[in-house]
Image: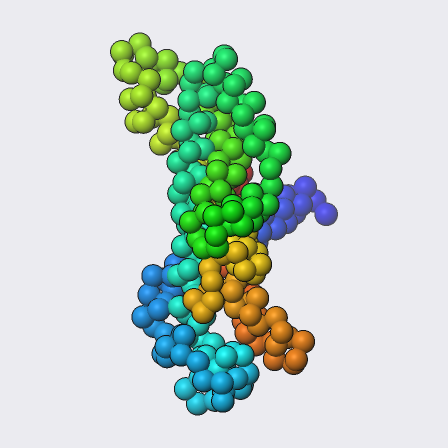
Length: 285
């Protein structure tokens, strides 16, 4: 094979790889977009009352008007999946907002101030790294009672140092750029420089981290709901459906757990793949 043929083959391979990555990104973006639409409009789109139970239809398979059948309490599975999208994604979304806000502030302050402030914040973050996020959320739910509030706040606190550690590196790189020194020479305050220039320039990294964080938080919330410490039945929630449908799996009726678990897996995988792609683009790869 000649050198020209080798180069041409390499170019074609790279183009196929790029095309494949583009298709994956668009598919993941479509899945995430659909999940967000369901989180907003899912309860309104439910064809039946998701909480209406009729034990005469317990674990009955698909019938006319009920394409996914019924759960162990005789409730329409499709309606519960659509209504459960909101509660399944509301908690992770709040965790992302709070953790990204706190992590960004800590990262910018640490990178800008440096010296003992940077050392102190880094030490505090190292201490927080020692506590598993799910364990803290479970303890908070056990102490303050089940629901969304306690796990949301604790998970946001637990994820903040991870966000801060990643964004700190990006903020340090921006802090060393010549345009920052030029802004200081012009007399702009540190707050103005960070708000108008530094933070917007690390926004791609923030978007990538927020996307990845959403997937991790969604898995954690599903685990907490599965243990009965998150959203409480009969409220529609994918994690709750996996838990309440567990006995049906052993009895030969896996539809409830299987459909809810599949929804969680598909959304989490799509979000993680999209987040990884955004992270690669933010790093220039």
